[in-house]
Length: 111
Image 1 (spheres, rainbow, N blue to C red):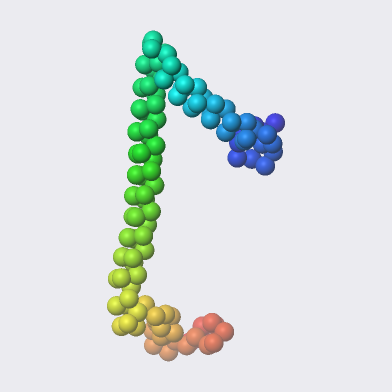
Image 2 (image 1 turned 90 degrees about the horizontal axis):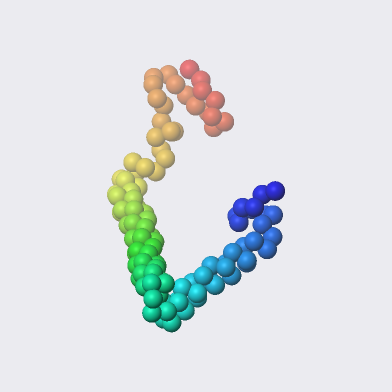
């Protein structure tokens, strides 16, 4: 039996796991506010570490989207002059590679 959360046969595991995680987050939040002992201190540390992890995750996702956008923009920026000059327009495969070489419209090679 496959108990992976990403499989088609997961069944009720996905909503139950989401509900369990939400319950643990609410429990940590409740204990952090209402327990003055060591459990409250540990819960508050977990809340701070979790908040920092969320901020770092948002920053990493944002930085990766910015990097993807800049990479696409850079490729398009440097490809534009090549297309204007005709160097990347696809005419190289229509030129013969050597003397007495001919390629017909059906892509057969003849000498």
